[in-house]
Image (cartoon, rainbow, N blue to C red):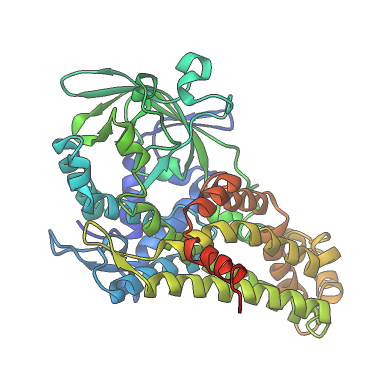
Length: 484
């Protein structure tokens, strides 16, 4: 089949029948692409898939090594620097479509799957069949251009104890039985972004597991279709209000649903299992395979797109109301320029210092990417704050589309015009600023970026503990002891 078109995506979505609970409704009959909570997101994902067949085809696809069909570039195994650049250019092409606000586009997990598949020999050390399962599964996702989501986190009930101890071990998703054909999983996981419109869910290791019998039922990695029997989704309340693209320019298009995933004795065939009851493999799942590095490469391209969007938005706002000459405005613009250029530099540093890992995959250098994923969640909080500063009271009194183009049209034209922009266009621009800084959509984006990779404090600790400072520390001691 190869790379899908937008219509292919919609057609497959129409055929799926996941069990989704949202806003008091229980959806089991498919047709999620028509539901108000998911329709805008489905259209946006369809547009991304259409890009694969358009002018960006050569950037977004390559010839499959198995079928020869055009498949997503996110599955390209990088062997050269040029391969890394092609992958990053593809990431950026998709990210620019949504200004980086779509955090779970298919290329994110595809990048991880690529790295995991190339490390199949390591998985085979635990179980030869599991390594083979992984290779076959990744080929399936690549050749059918499936959209995957994943879920990593046990329910947020009592974080003072391990998942195996919460409510006597009955809450977090765990293996409760095995038979000749597979495993049975019971419990829950959070937070599965885009799960209602995804084809498959990857249930991968999350927190560090202890090498104890109690942790074995929680030591696994597998994949199942989102409409597997016994799998249920409880989607969060949407952050869009059905006002259309004029009033909700971002939310109406890019509102990504997040969901709690409940496994009600879901049977997972062995051919879809990649790790089972092996805590050592689980604890090294991402680092040993370089999956985290390749996934973070995609994230860095996406967050660069988001930074560039805010720089463009702030520049347009400053021009529209004539504030660009003020020193404090220029200082803020310079801050955002710095964010954009630092992110570019971190990506370039990671790519130019790439090295081949143990499995023959050219992998971007981890330290710049790790710096990016620790740094951006903090500066990301500044971007909407600066938008609020630029817009000030102008963000507070924005009329809706029915007034802008209805009975209040003359007043809008007179009193809401800008320096060199008419009233409707100024409202349109400031609606975008509102959705990027104040709305529920903006709030969810801020929370999402802050915790994208997990607890920022733990991430900082991991960075500090893993960064090799030996030579730098020795320089200091050598100077301290210098007697010249």
